[in-house]
Image (cartoon, rainbow, N blue to C red; front, top):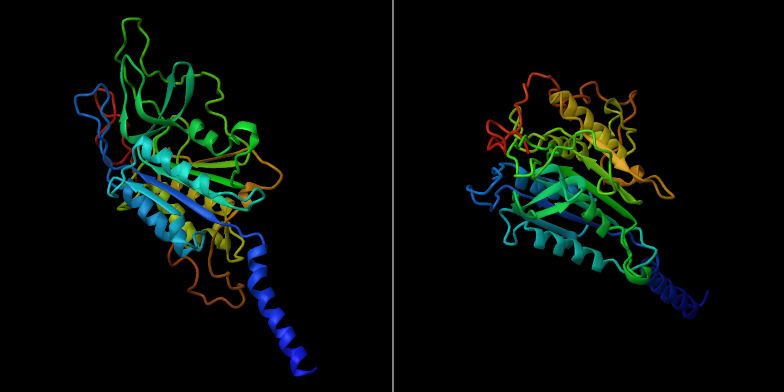
Length: 352
């Protein structure tokens, strides 16, 4: 080969090396992380919301762990709103963050994933015939005789990630993941209006409505089952219990064969949920995390949430390699009753 031909080949090899990665499909992961510790509602309001201790810490820890696990490769793709950040987790700011992320997704056939995680107060309510999970933003206010303020129905939030807009032109991320570490009960508010009906009513045996149903392409991990409370600060765990075990799973525990994983060095969403669910329900007997999804043309549960070191085969593994970081799963905690005396939200920091 002549020097001229050699230079020509090298020249085009460099061009291909630079251009090919741009042409190939590139998956981008985004995270919207919301943690509400302080609530703005006045104490004299109809149903005051007590402050929490660890919701903000949950999201700070989750942010750090998602980066460590290589789910997030660009920190600019993380939107963090907590009671400690400059921009507070109000209803307006949360919806603004969602809108900003969705506007950044422009490639039609993308492989992108958006993770929305919320830690804070949550309830299940029936408002104007609409039954569903409600996320309480920092400006949440429950009113007896008028519409509630500062709340987001979970179904309305999910709809934003599934609505293609006018003329079906809006581009959506391929994978939409929701993680909710919040209560899903309805506190025993016995105050009644003149009509005799509760302004915020328990679900009772009412059938599930569209407000409760998910949208295709969305998978949701909830820290507890309907009518259950979600706890924080138990057994010296200074986080929400469910979030604590999610983080532990993301750091490699969920991929271990001894914990139900396959040891391949990738933490699939299903592995992560299985691990966090078992650990949470082992520690808190009446807090059972749930997973909900409506499949599309591929298994959402196989979405990779993080990377870790592949597990060494048993014949080569040192004897002390297993179980050293596994937390206690004893059921020694006696869960407190939600709501406290007199109804409303308890100021205790063990329930959300």
